[in-house]
Every structure is written in structure tokens, then in C-alpha cells.
Image 1: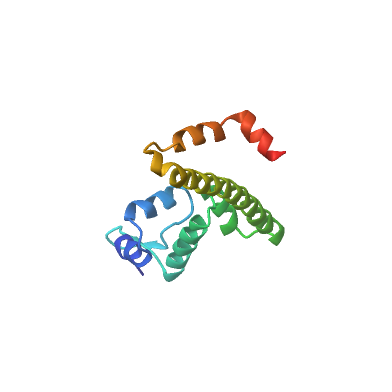
Image 2: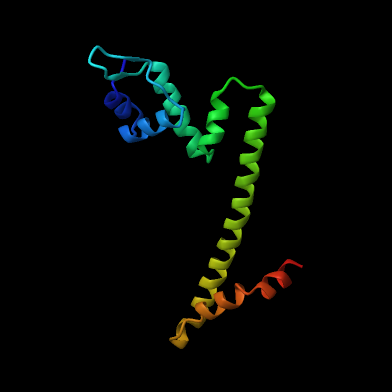
Length: 137
């Protein structure tokens, strides 16, 4: 059995995170000591690591609650597919940002000899709604 401090060290999280997960219903101490200290099992440590891993992949706490419940595979698949769609949309946004940055850097290199960088002007034009629509199609 682990105290809350030992559990926090083993999972590399602050004790406040463990208390927060308890309030959210994600984690409960397995037992209490005679001195009323929270005691956690190895299973609790594994659950805590799962929660952190799920968060690292972008699942929200509500989703993690669902993932931790005994659920039909279809429900779990639905949550994963939803997260996958969110990641795909974020990647699309990041590719657009990357393209704008690449174009801005190229423009900066082109105008470096003039002593005035035109990147601000270029970014302003690129951010206009009418310009974005014409690029799409």
C-alpha cells in the first residue's frame, strides 16, 4: 500500500492532482490507515498512470470516466474515434500554421536586403477572410 505522497512520487504527479482526481471520481483510496491516512494499492497506481496517459493523448476527464467504466467496446471505440477526429482537425490547423510560417520566413529572407521585413504585411493579408476563401477554392 502507498500513502498519497508515495503514490504521487511513483506516478510523478503532485498530491494535489491525486486529490483532484478523487474529487472528480476517477480515483479513490483503497483503504485508510489507523491514523486515517489515504492508502492506495498497486492497482490505484496503474489506474493513475492510465488517467495520465489518457490525458496525454487528449482525452478529457469526462471521457476518462467513461473509459474507466466497464463499457461495451462500441462506447470505447466511439470515444477513441471522436478523439481521432479532433486530432485530425488539429493537425489540419497546424499544417496551415506551418505553411503560413514557412511562407512568412521565405518572404522575410527575400526582403532581408531591403532592411524592412514585410512579414507583418504578408500575415495581415493572409489572415483576411476573403483571401482565405480564394485560396480554398
